[in-house]
Length: 232
Image (tube, rainbow, N blue to C red; front, top):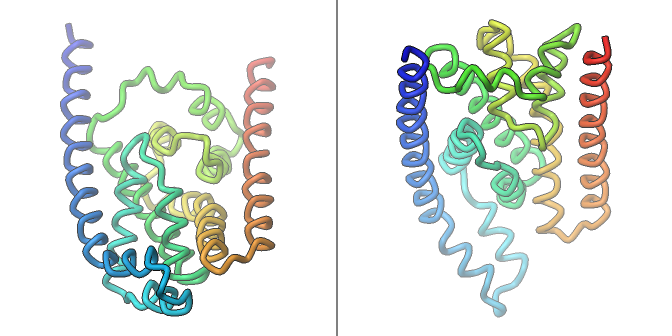
């Protein structure tokens, strides 16, 4: 009976948290559409020069950049919502340097907020602790290194990495560096990819693809580590 009540409470908390997150997500998307709807019209107008489109798309300032930071942060905190498309679009809109900073800020904020929520509100069933990714990271000699790798690898669900940090008892301050180091590579690669798409720089696109391939190889390292731990 106690377990059923706990699961029901977790379900209610999850519905409320995701509902608030989705509402904020929709609001931010509407604000960004309002900011970019003229740019999109120019983009699909064949009579407008590429230079003018590029200038218009990259004419937005700090206010819109903050909207992107918040959007990425919220998407990062909601389980199952990918941020890759938005991060690439940020690279299109702000270029590789500023775009990378926006992506890093959003991903960092989103993960820290998620960890803060997990520490204070019951949002995940304890049975998630048996997940292979959670166990692989938790069993590492240096779990913070495992957290960093988890954030780096796109195929590892971010909410599971955040949950693992919570299970290990880490505070937001203690995981600040692992989160930052973990989100750096993909945040930069996505921004570079977006800029390369807009400029037609296929060499840079190839470099980004190679970089992402290297990151995916980390999946094999984590799985190999998990097998070794099971064999002990």
